[in-house]
Image (cartoon, rainbow, N blue to C red; front, side, top):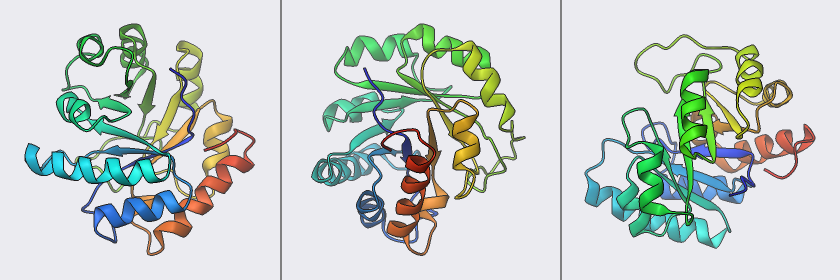
Length: 212
């Protein structure tokens, strides 16, 4: 399944400067076309309600909605995809549930994990953290831009760089071989979420990498 977006927004209601549905709407108004709902601490019924609300909003803008980890919630809200982590069910198992109807993204931190994701049938991966990031409570050593080049040479599926990528660095990250960029606080933590999204969408387009 073709990955037709370059900017991948991951939610975190704790850093968002607006209530999450409003924040996501503003990001979509700014040009974001793919959103991953990642609110791991929410009880499943609250998560489902939020997912249904974001499904409605993303459809208004023709944007894709991914659900982190919960394949059941993704199926229930007719999401466009599911995003799996190292503690999620394996990609192969998720494929048996969603078939070809949904895209599958996988979080990775090294080449071995990336290769396993690709072999399992993932459509794309996130990789990082590239730079220091405020979104991780537990300190993780950044891998740096050069690590994207090594990752790109080892797999064939699209790579989304994740972690601390801010406005002004998009060109460098994409030039290193990343298909796109995953964002959390750079958009949701901005005082003007719509404008922050617009700037990043324009940067990515300006880097000659196609439509975000």
